[in-house]
Image 1 (cartoon, rainbow, N blue to C red):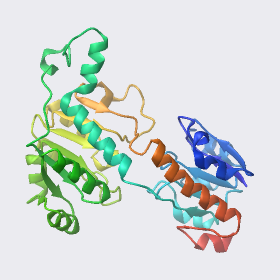
Image 2: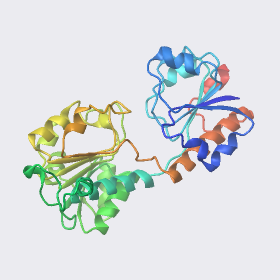
Image 3: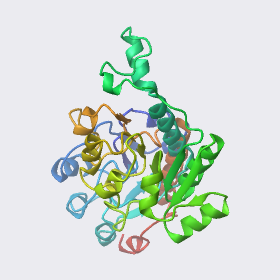
Image 4: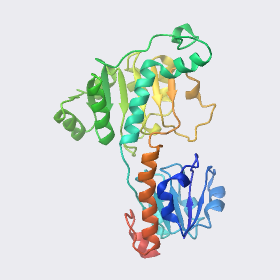
Length: 330
């Protein structure tokens, strides 16, 4: 098969142990993104199969129509709304889903919480400039960091990642407060944590608030400006899930108003994020370039599953197909 691997920004996939699974196939790895259906259509038209790195490229119907040879989209992890499944099915394009793990995103979330709470990044950067124990040259921002013990960790949604974050919080001596659906709250209570009395209480009581919701129509923009305005002036808002969970421009506005006082963010509505993005100009924001799952163990797990799905399809035994109706149209 002629296979394209998209959006490998770091040219990391060819270095993975599992990459040799594709020996014998014609493989092209793209390290840069193309913008627009026209450019992408020209780039991807020759390929039989595409391997997607999460949702870095969106595949609407207009793009799929430009790919007459495409028979398989092999997704790393689960699909997250970035492929028009109905359009793919109508064109006989099968979509194979992979597997994932909560470990890497949970560990990154905790790293961001610790780094932001202790002001590690500005201290380290200023040390290189010869400034000893200086978090900022701005006196208003040159305050002390703080520990986590005894403070309230608020978690919205208690799934696999939320559960791990709650465990980390407990290990650090934090008071863990959970909000979400009825099942989330019940599971948290069963594990010995407190369920928030209301959504409002979650934001009001939080010293650190971390989002771990799935993005869907019902959760898009679910965090409002009013929610953020309830947070303490010294609270930390953390989002390693999806940027679209927060209402458009609400976080930037809230930070400028001082509630919450700080944010740690790994996800953005437009990626790669432009260097002049307003969020990067706010000094109380710690931002990382969507690296929650971008590490060696996760990549081996994600890509081995995706490559195995490609091989199974090529061998006439499709596996983990999200839209089996597409196979009947092939």
